[in-house]
Length: 171
Image 1 (tube, rainbow, N blue to C red):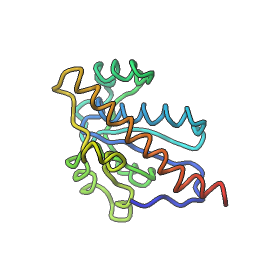
Image 2: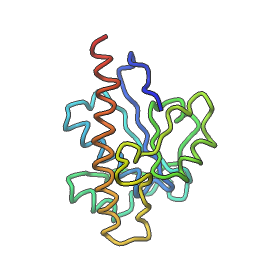
Image 3: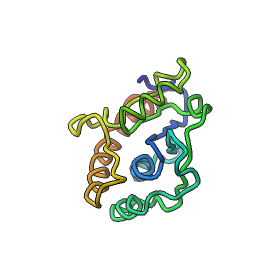
């Protein structure tokens, strides 16, 4: 994955999981919180999507919502959606929660945009390659996902600030 053109003023990030009701909305909410806390909200466009349309139009899973809320993250307004062909053009970074979703994205993504795809956990490899799907798990599974996403989102924001935003500020 390469950084987008440093002359672009807004960094567009899309988080992707299977149904867009657990992991990707949690990542979106967590990353948004870090961006706002850093005072960079005007420099980012952040969204999430699912590779399948199982839950299109639905809210985030209530267990994800509650786990996020306990950490000061509000994902209550989230509505699930499926990734669209234009997303590959629109977003600078498209981060998959696991290898299966990454493979689906690679299959759908035009070759010219594949450099935008990566695994979310490539930004926190000490946790492993994938964010596990907590859907069939207990509340501890949802907390574990948020623990993983906290580290990955922090590191991802640092990566963008170092690689992109600082470059564009110098220009």
